[in-house]
Amino acid sequence: MATKTLEARFEHLSVNDENEPMQKGSAMLKPKQGSLTTAMSMTALGSSHLTSNQNRANLLKYALQTSKDTSTNPSTLTTTQTTSISTLPPSPSRKPAINRSSDETAMQRHSNSSTSATIYDQPTPPRAFHLGMFEIGKPLGKGKFGRVYLAKERSTNFICALKVLHKSELQQGKVEKQVRREIEIQSNLRHPNILRLYGHFHDSKRVFLILEFAGKGELYKLLRKENKFAEWKAAHYIAQMAAALKYLHKKHVMHRDIKPENILVGIHGEIKISDFGWSVHAPNNRRKTMCGTLDYLPPEMIKPGSADNFYNEKVDLWSLGVLTYEFLVGEAPFEDTPVMTQRRIARGEMTVPSFVSAEAKDLIQRLLVLDPEKRIPLDEVQRHPWIVKHCVQKGGERGSGKGTSS
Ligand code: AMP
Picture 1 (tube, protein in one colour):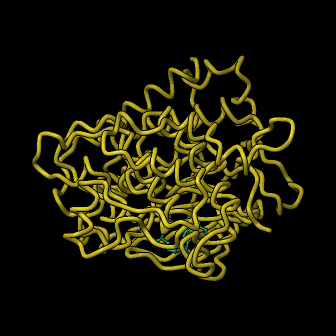
Picture 2 (picture 1 turned 120 degrees about the horizontal axis):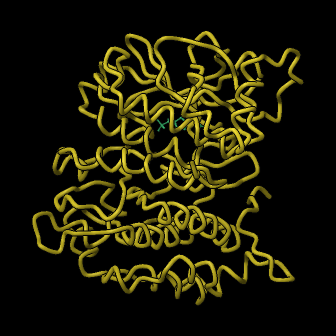
């Protein structure tokens, strides 16, 4: 079966999830929520409740993974409690495999497109993750619902970040659905500027998320340390953001919570968008959903109950404008008391300080447009003179993948 069809089928599974009712208004007061701070409803996480849909989803994920990524070097351990994909990519730090298991060979056989039909006829059950597979290292940080540790998968030496979420806290915070959605969406994304979610597993009390390790941590901290970024650096970050958002929107996913706290930075200074807790498949058909942090909310999302409160992926363009502003100025454009922030967003009232270049100011003004349809599209962001000036190297090559670690 063609990969495209598989993807389409899997996306459909996630769309169903979005249509489930969500807590209205809770997002407006959203504190910093840990990324992947939840989702799986406890019932859905429990192995006893693995529905045929979920099993099918796992099989699809597995098939998708193996049919797409022929270089994958899967890990091969089992548990009865897992619901995740069982492959980790080759790690730069990995030792040569001493004993490539027969399972791995079997999985590599699956990656051969000529045998893809076999996946459906006689599927090999995906191998599962469990805690014993990982050597736990130093804590990387703490979110609202969990802690994140540096971890190494023992058999492959694959370095990753392991996020530990306590089921009781997820239940108490009523964020199971959010985590579930986050897992479903994030585990299907493959882009250099989007944090990978390799898989997840759970025990009776905790949910574990196996994440790509972002060596330089939170972008928010880097921004606070530098106060504001130099224009070249901000342009590189924005170019990478545009590339990642373009990928997301092509897959009909809107992030809805773009802000520095939800962006991690890789070891080479490259951006990694994380925290898909508020992301959904676009267009959103539940008009009253409110989410995100006030400073970054677009005008079409701050009017609960109004007929205008219907939005699409263009919400992320507004947030990209807020982000560009904050990178260059050091504070968000509508920062004020909550009431005033809301009022100023609704009117698009902001001023760009004179130390910001004319090109950057132009891009900000083209993104922070009240009418979502009139915001500059991502293609044009990538071609904008400010981006071209800083990111396109001589010879016309785009430099958006380049890190900013100098
Ligand atoms: P979170 O719960 O996702 O907000 O994570 C809490 C903190 O852990 C973050 O603020 C980061 O500093 C750190 N962290 C989370 N995920 C990663 C990761 N994949 N790589 C490196 N650090 C991370």
